[in-house]
Amino acid sequence: MPFRAKGRALGSLAAIAAGLLLLTGAVHAIAWGEPDGDRHPATGALFLQFDPAKFSLPEPGVPAGILPVCSGSVVARNGDRALFLTAGHCVVALLNSMDGFAPLDPAPVVSFSGDLHADLGVTIPVDMSTLYFQLGLSGPPVAIGALPDFDDIGLLVLQAQSAADVPDPLELPWPGLLDALGQRELRHSEFRVIGFGDDVTPPTPHTRVMEFGLRQIGYPRPINLGEKYLLAQQNGPSGSSGIYFGDSGGPAFWVEPSTGEERLVAINGGPLGAVNVAPFVAHHGQYYRLDTPHALAFIEGARLAEGF
Image (cartoon, rainbow, N blue to C red; front, side):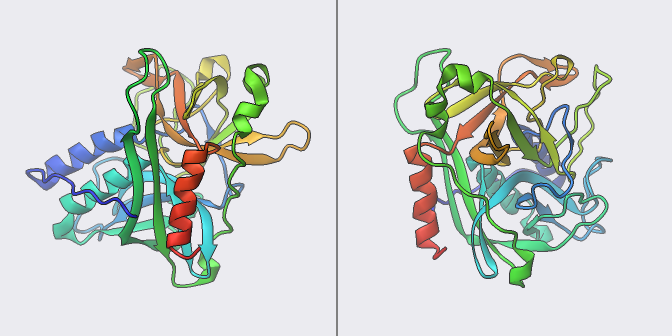
């Protein structure tokens, strides 16, 4: 059953733009990463598309005529239709931005171009009549200091003009994949995260400029595993990397040591822990697990309901 939410109205387009940039600030992106190229073609950028003559952000790092929302990946396809996995707060941000910019007839789309600045690629429309998301506590609050019992998962249906425009889907994990590793193996595992958001690179300190549209890869160091979240270090000076503004909803992969094969295990959530205001750098990232029965059942329910 789709969950639908109405966004609250804001006073002006300027206020809406500022508010949505703050909202997508919870939408976090690759820190200290590197360009990913075409290595992960199933991961796309979710954004609103406008006529640049009508509206463009005053941000030098955002392609003209788009409002960044999030990242995400195809997890199922049926001909020219795709099921696009992202974070729950990304779906809420999309709803709010659609409401706020309604007078400008925004087009909610996903592009799988690896560099939107060089080539916007084929923009595939989002079916706004069918949205699935869970965002919030699914049970009583957990103890202070523990990873939260908080759901943050969303699914969108994309409708392409041609089946050739839809990339092959990522394979979902089996239940309990991360639990089976054990704490010691988990901390020595390699993880890779993908997204289209800000690039925080040396030298630091870094003055943040809104960058969105380049698919990047980061390498966080796993620290702890909770019931619904993986916590990882992402600190460039110490050699790790992770999520920052613009990457929420993108995929997190565990790398099989014996084969080097990537296995989807989580989606990018947001930064956590030590955060500097200037520069804004989060040294830990939080990733919503997909290998739990709850997350897998949520995706399966949407998949069956939509005929994938």
